[in-house]
Image 1 (spheres, rainbow, N blue to C red):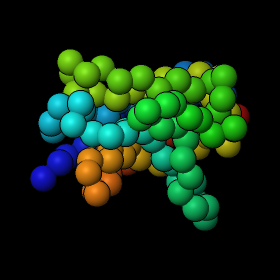
Image 2: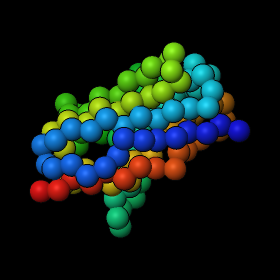
Image 3: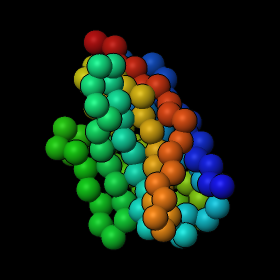
Length: 113
């Protein structure tokens, strides 16, 4: 059983920064890919950033968000800068291992205007 635990969410003013962390219960070398989705109220879950063979970002966050992986600490991060109110959502970490996709429980990010 794989566990992913997110942290780092919170309330921030527009223009501010946050760093989300996702700690995995096993070495992230074993995952084909890891990344972040988000879901705002009344909206579908959308991919924010993914890191596997290549790194990709949603157009709405390019240049503002950066995904990184710390293999030694079994952790993936999402550095978010120049935050906007439309970035407000629950952010979910995912990890792809074999045929399975694992999810964290989510962390709330709220950006005030």
